Image (tube, rainbow, N blue to C red; front, side, top):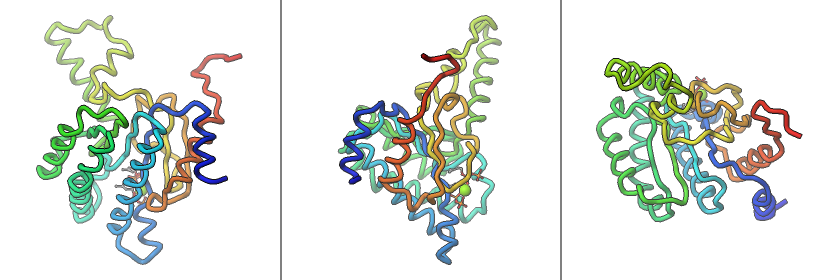
Length: 247
Ligand code: IPE
Ligand code: IPE
Ligand code: MG
């Protein structure tokens, strides 16, 4: 089936509202070609660009979250970390015009204070310039960890409790999410992970509680429109019970 036909087909079914992607396999892609790992990251940037463009053009979801750098990724060799930070800053700087014109709203989720000042500035600029856009909400997970997000909520809750503003009986799931730095993020419907590993690696632990999971051996630099369509197609074939008995 041609991509166009496939698109027509998936538009007839329920589309995921929020897709979150673990973009894994850059290093292995490079190693397989005798290239340094960072070349895989460079190529991975192109794959991310391709996906954002495709999803925006075809309105395949309203929220797209890309896992670009985890809280654990700081433990990689300093040269690789530095390269990634520069690449992410360049990506935002170079693509901002196109993203803004395409109606994409950009937001970074994660530990802003750990980012190098240049990248933090690019993030602020992108968030500010695109804040009124509504076509696609792109969340870039940068120095992000699902546990960090929960810890931040705990910290706020304890503080508010000390201040007398929060009582134990006020704490429920909605309250916890409101206190998390990802408060504005809707539940994830579909998690896609490339690179063949079948794990979440501390991604959106809270928001992905009932996400459908799609794993593919395709390495991130080779991720393309057809692979995305396979994931959406698989999603449409799943029965989502949310713990209930559905008739
Ligand atoms: C994912 O690719 C990109 C980041 C984690 C930043 P990897 O760099 O983890 O690639 P592999 O898993 O080593 O192939
Ligand atoms: C997950 O990939 C993080 C990102 C894609 C940014 P990793 O390569 O860091 O995950 P592990 O170490 O294989 O679990
Ligand atoms: Mg990896």
